[in-house]
Image (cartoon, rainbow, N blue to C red):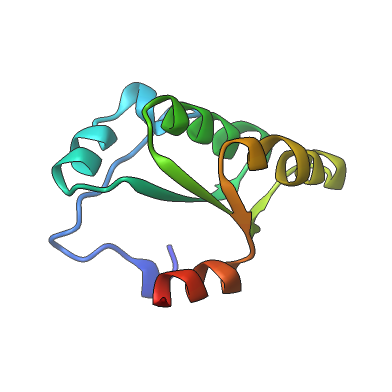
Length: 105
């Protein structure tokens, strides 16, 4: 865990054990409780965890952002296929600087 991103004592921590956190955790309870409607997705494996989470989030009507340069796949071909073809059908795909600028307004 990067110390700057470590959860604070009041932050809920959800541990997942499957590809998507929506299947075996209570993450949706927290998201709905706090009125969260947009999810920013990052991580490794782009073709597994990120894609599975994105598909489940879209099925549950969340707006999604995938941060291109904060995801990694086993091969460049897998990464580019997801980021350039598959994910734009379900999410805004952008680099971290673009996402940060959008959040900052």
